[in-house]
Length: 295
Image (cartoon, rainbow, N blue to C red; front, side, top):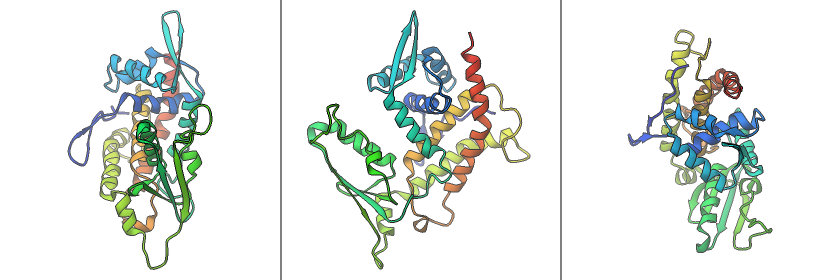
């Protein structure tokens, strides 16, 4: 398998780089959650990210930040520091994997629409940012000031899990309203879709993902057009980059009704690209991690 692309061009021509936290979450979701592997030495995590162009200092800083947010549990044995998942990070990563490996990750679940409105005091900007981020991950777009919309029947309680819990129970400073809606005949939702989501930018994100990884597929099997044969010595690095890029695409492109999309919408090609490469990399990546953990 060839070296995964470290950079890509965004629609505006600017370079796109993977963040250390983004790579660490992809690695942990793929290897630690799915493989049920316990705490890993910091040196292993630093080594994998170093192969993707991230310096040791940046990786250590990211690990410290994630531990501070309750996403990682550091453990020290002698001079060795290892990092394990917390209950919070394991829950988040398992939920993310449900969509990562959904055979139709860009198709709505259920009919109609889900609408959410929330109110958070100005003094709780951190909570406001968290609500917006979780709504975006759940596929919501901003329809009007304070009103978010998502296609289908979204589980809002799951999407906003923990937002109204301040550690002692319900957080009364956070007000969230959620309700279902359906389209009224004669009043198409197409305009609302174009308002809440930038379809041109989402198409560009799909095409960017495919372009970043198309060369990997061609290099792996230039004649057959599919991944085949030996993967090589860098499956751990490659699968980390692949899952990070896929998660980035899933965050950027929600589940949208096909009737509001162009006939050549590129979602199916993106799903095929990810599935093909992941099938080739997952097993060798686990084998490589096992070798790195040998005494």
